[in-house]
Amino acid sequence: MIDGLPKKFPIILIIFLAAFTFWVDKTVRQPTREQGQGPEKNPDYIMKNFSTYQVDHIRDKHEKLLAEKMLHYVADGATYFEQPRLINSKVNKPEMWVRADKANMSGDDDIHLNGNVKVIRYDAGGKETTMTTNYLHINRNDDISETNKPATITQSNIIIKTVGIVINNNTKIIHLLSDVEFVYDKAR
Image: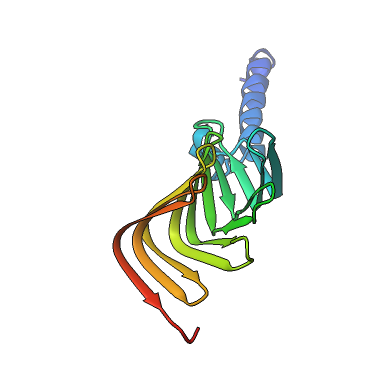
């Protein structure tokens, strides 16, 4: 038996090296939870304290988009934001501020804001108008904002509650869709 050992040594060594290599590979490459989810669940990039500024000279429009965190997914091209803030302004017009808990963007035009959405706009006289809702869809190209969820609009001593709203920022027309409640409070 000892006489045959030198002839079998290279085979035993190769088996040992293969087993050792397999063990090292498994040890070094511990699968993470993200790796197990596939490429469609892993962002291709993440940015913290994200900000971007866009200027449209044709429509005299300036837009700033800020977020605490931005995640982009290559599988579907979607972009997600945590604590987003959108600041819209046109030359010689008051700014509009929008904030939410989360948002996602499909393409370059559509932003879907979710959770504690608050829109603040000032008129030419400096009066503040505030709208709150849980969901808001903004089409940046058409300058239209809409929701099918309950919304509350507050300006000075007027409170309007509605379910569903469409706001056209170009025409300055607001459509209140259903269950509209209007309260005028002189004391406010």
